[in-house]
Image: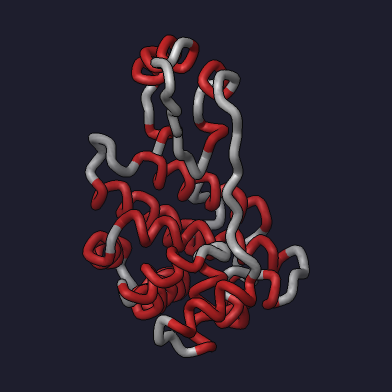
Length: 217
């Protein structure tokens, strides 16, 4: 992931990009190219790779022994990328997603402790947990604006998400999405994953039980 380069590493790459060795091609792969410094992007020719058509992706997933209904849900969660959807299936993602949503619902209702949920989320995988939480919050925002279930990434959970979202206003939702996105970007750094998860989940809990608190802080 080229966007993981820090500034020093990106700067050291500039000369090589300007004067590459003869008969060579340099490929920088990034799912978030806007995170690359402008100096690097300006020296590269963008070649976008897009997911295949939805019917093609579903056909391929069902050929990999996935049930059609499961394939549809996973393809939505994977942003239309079949290989990513298959990886989610092999990692029992749907079972993990159910646990994540149950925890968010329980925290909102005051039936769970953030620290216990944080430990469980770390065991499930911090990157997976925060990545899904982002899609959950994005869906809550879509639903708040009147979108239908078919316009969400978690369309099979739209009714539960709609019920959950009724307790929050748009500012809280947008602040929450910003906080979770920022937290996800910190993964892989020196910050302890459990502390990061606990902090976000404590703020989620407090946002429900102390209206003056937002997840954004």
